[in-house]
Amino acid sequence: MKKTITVFTPTFNRAYCLGQLYQSLLRQTASDFCWLIVDDGSSDTTKDLVAGWIAEQKIPITYLYQTNQGMHGAHNTAYAHIETPYNVCIDSDDYMPDDAIAQILAHLPQLEASDCAGMIGLDCDPQGKLIGTAIPEHWERGTLNDLYRKGVTGDKKVVLKTQVARQFPPYPIYPGEKLVPLGTLYLQIDQHYTWLYTNAILCVVEYQPDGSSNTILRQYKVSPRGFGHARLLRLRYPDSLANHFKQAMHLVSSALFSRDFSLLTKSSRPILTFLAFLPGCALHAYIRFKTR
Image 1 (cartoon, rainbow, N blue to C red):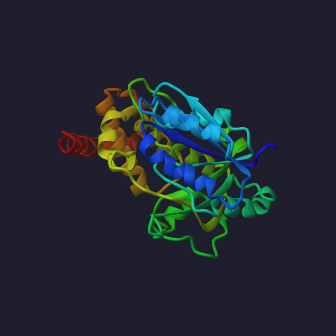
Image 2 (cartoon, rainbow, N blue to C red):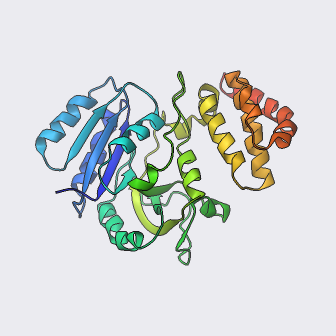
Image 3 (tube, one colour):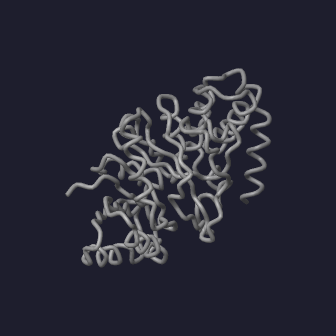
């Protein structure tokens, strides 16, 4: 029987912690889901580990292997292969509360009756403490950017309609780089759709020392075209002058790291980008100093 939700997991050399997610999926109180694992070039025992789980036949699992493209490349592969109407990404070092799938399913009648792109729920740490803040109860729907603009903080968990994800271009792949910010897709979705808000906890987050959230300055340095792409998108869409100036500074820094000054000519805010040139050079120097 075809499932309703795909839980998809990009993974790279995370065999040591992937079992925690698997066990959480076995504990789900609702079974209307399948698991798609996108192995982004692992050289550890991930393939054999997953083969053993598939043989157990406890939950439907699809395993896809690809040469390393980075997290965004794994998302591209997932969106191209998902066969269910809804999907949610759970990272290899995170896991789901036992009722997470049931919580998502409970909101689907409301989602299906709306033109929302999907729903936004909460993350917590292993002790149950929220990552950031909850969403005010009287906020029923809006954009992802609305949440942060109005003072909500912390990573949130996105459940996405698969047909909406496919309306937008895949993340660009830049040779030699491993990261394009995943938020660029949600930023584009925000221009056309709203999201249903919920304070249901959908993911338990365990940040790894080698995770991208812990190495952001280095990522600015080694994936400058990916971040440049993100800065150009953010400059294109409405935001405060202060935020646009910050994006322009980062765009200058990305251009310097990539030695691709055509990034600057692509800016939709050329005057602001010109004014941000010297501060952007200072930011570039700071990142170089902190990552030497």
